[in-house]
Length: 297
Image (tube, rainbow, N blue to C red; front, side, top):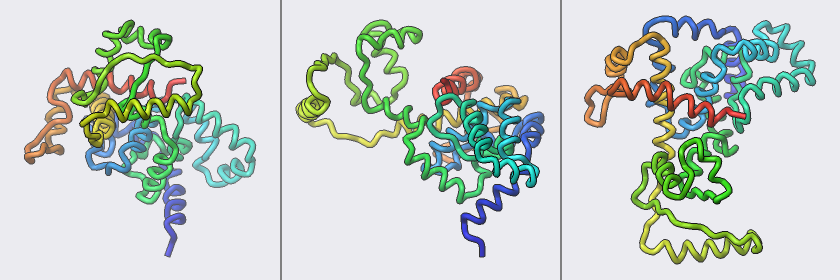
């Protein structure tokens, strides 16, 4: 009986012969496989790495450079692959070249270095490999977690304000307004002013901050935030919407199509988005913003 490691290696060997052509063929028809757009079945412990995986696929879709480099790094021909792997220095250079296509991404799934990456949705990956990738992702403090890091505490010094100018935040009031646009848990979110004396050591500043927290917390009870989890799901849904529209469906057709598969809390059919504006915003605003956040230099 094969060990899980052997099963994963066998599965990886099998997909080396799958090419991105399969993905293009699916996308050329009306509608696409559910695994490409429906992410409600992805377990919570895999949602974060699924987000990275699927957005990484979107990032290199249509990239001739990525296709060329991955074929050199993991050739579909077994003999060529063996020769390439023997040249460890070359593999290292190719690995770096492929990784550079993803900007400053802190985490990349291993399949991003395989030609079959584009043809293999996350939900089609071997379960054992999905679990290992999810564990690795959790340990590495990946880029997607930066979406959640800003939820608990966001400090902006006056010298940092120019970074927010493009988003329209040029003073205290506009900065608060911008922050409220990104956070839907406002019942216990509070704003104020900060004066920091850098003459004190980090340890002294942290101790003073702990004292301040103890004083100001009062009767406010910490409640486990769901915003990070919800945002991850929202970003996956937006990507699914983009792929459905890219496949040739209109927003109206996509609404009817997704209603066949999705249910609300009462068990009634529901679309992925219920308005044409929602579909357009997902494709043209949300997905580009997430791609930039995850893979920009």
